[in-house]
Image 1 (tube, rainbow, N blue to C red):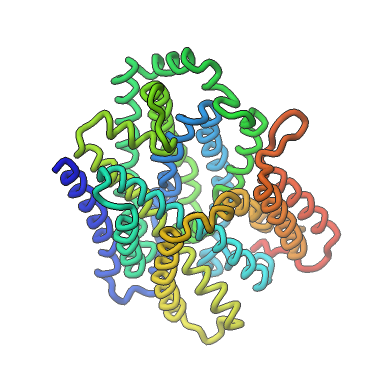
Image 2 (spheres, one colour):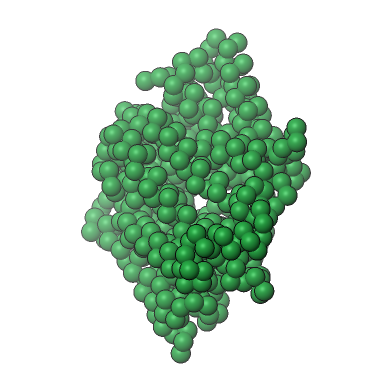
Length: 487
């Protein structure tokens, strides 16, 4: 019976958010392709803010941040730094992305690259790489959802059932409503996440330690140096932190779904406004970190078997079951809404850039409605594929996931310099991208991340990005043709 209250709350959240996401599509059964894909390009400041904030409040907010704090200590603080830097980058580049999108009716990141360099093959290549990194990111949301629901239902719902039920719901509302469905559900999810993290991040250290300051003092007394770099690790030092901040800040907006989300803004002032106010949202990530640090003390004699479960274990062992149900519901939303955005962006990249512009060798004679219909069917196929991989081959995409952030960061030179530097060239974009991606895969797959250099440890993505930049600038300098279009 104890698990029943948690189950009821969980299903209320999962079904409720699916219904809310489906409403825009049910109200407008003849929603055109532009409304479905990019929200009609008329999202205002706060609606677009909630969509962008959704990338902060993913499964990582509940699982990763607290898990890192519990297991690694001081290196966890990089999480606060990369957001601060990423929003500065976004303030300067997102208005330009929005401007290009409105002026040239762009829908995907591949469209933007194709326009900048007047090169459909380059746009298709970037789209293929983007899809390769989005798929494991989508699988991560699925796997995290299964873990969250299994723990918060006290094992009453096996993770496989949870993944199937929730992702069928996600596919349904994305199929019907597109980006408008993602936007309407993101508002509810972000408000719930902020409230939950604030409450538990303040209550738990006071309950167990007498305050946040006392908690930090007790952790330091029990594990001297744990709250500093490299903390509970041997190689996540200051140099690793600095190079990781560069990679994360550069790569934050390079994920393909951010381009589509930015194209939804009604004017360039919207993403500029959001870059100013999104740091407020990012600061809330300190609260799950505090929960993780508190767990170091609470479970000193009985370690948590999986570090990423620190937040959920703390709530499970400190509150009635119905509270665990609320956290499970919030955690489920933290996986479902980002997954919806990833599903939409991946389906658009495949249908528009890879299938129509690539395999069909052009979009002449292809109506926007045909693109929408193809993307909708792909959502169903992608959902089935992600479920299959998560259930039967959960480790198949691990290497892609490990390289994901560093991999998409390699888009930074070709996109940013392509929008701001008139000497940027198509050949430079291709050469830099190939060098960067090859280095990322080589270093990551040979377990050379972080890479020991000169007594410190460098993020492998930073090494690849530096090489990418050098190649891009040098090739651009000697290339006379194929320059970018700065209009």
